[in-house]
Image 1 (cartoon, helix red, strand yellow):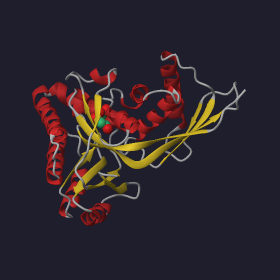
Image 2: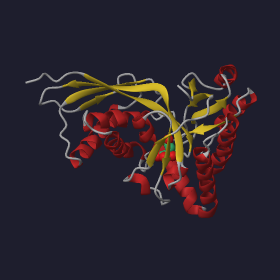
Image 3: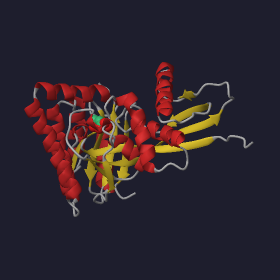
Image 4: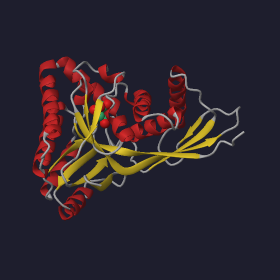
Length: 318
Ligand code: MEV
């Protein structure tokens, strides 16, 4: 009988460029993966051992890990997948809870383990999406789409619907080419989780359907224009980012600290910038025309980032 081997699986973090929150209501989204990975080391265990998920270097409470394993087992059972006992050790370079898709990357590596080597990307994405419900309640599928497919992708949904509509179906994804530029991205501590922020937008939409609907529609149009513009210039990309940021602030998902950080980056020479992901703190990015400006922006922004935060540069063509 072959001896089961250790196995390492990795998935990258993501940076949403456009479409956060609006995607939950069926509007398009656009994002890219970042050069920071989460890894899962799977070691076989004896037949009497349970499935164990451990995060030795990450701030994940053991009770959350245990609850998530139960959720994972339920998803596997519902898919007719038999799980073999194993110790799964997760390590990560992606800041946890920072808006860079650490939970989506975790769901992707686990989905790849569940689905097996022969599975196609769509099967892995669907499984990752199902697992992501544990963290986000009603994920749109764009985060796990990015961490599964990797690179820059645009996402479109087949129709506009209420929150949760996208929970069982995935959007279609197409690979896109972004204008050549350097993105300075980073994250600050969050005041609210993705689940809370998505719920807050749903609450705002329930009490002000017209006003909230208008903001979501405009966010959707900005994203669609960026996706459709084949010759998008760096300036247009940056202007679209800043316009989306104003709308996200109106939606109530920006914070005073995020606004200060974004102001600092623009003052240092960035052509545009916005929050990325659910907001409430978390990730942001700036569009910079070249390395020199990117370095200036990174230095200016770093002054506002606490030690627990992150700043990195990502080339749109790497
Ligand atoms: C979070 O990264 C993006 C949101 O749009 C939620 C989602 O699409 O599932 C806020």
